[in-house]
Length: 93
View 1: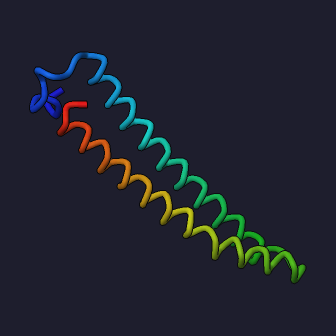
View 2: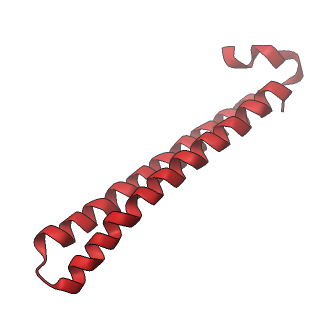
């Protein structure tokens, strides 16, 4: 609870727990984006490497192209939410 000492007199236990749950949910969402990125990338690589049908290879290339978008969006959302959480901590909820 050290990270809340700045606004200790303004916050009750429920506020501490709500901020901690929000931080954990943000991290869990970020990990979900990373997991999606890896899954789509590996699917695309698998289609390109192991399938001889030309249309499926194009699908693999599309998946390889789209997967970094999930990674970038996940990072952007994680840091924007983290910035909002820090503002809440500074304001004392």
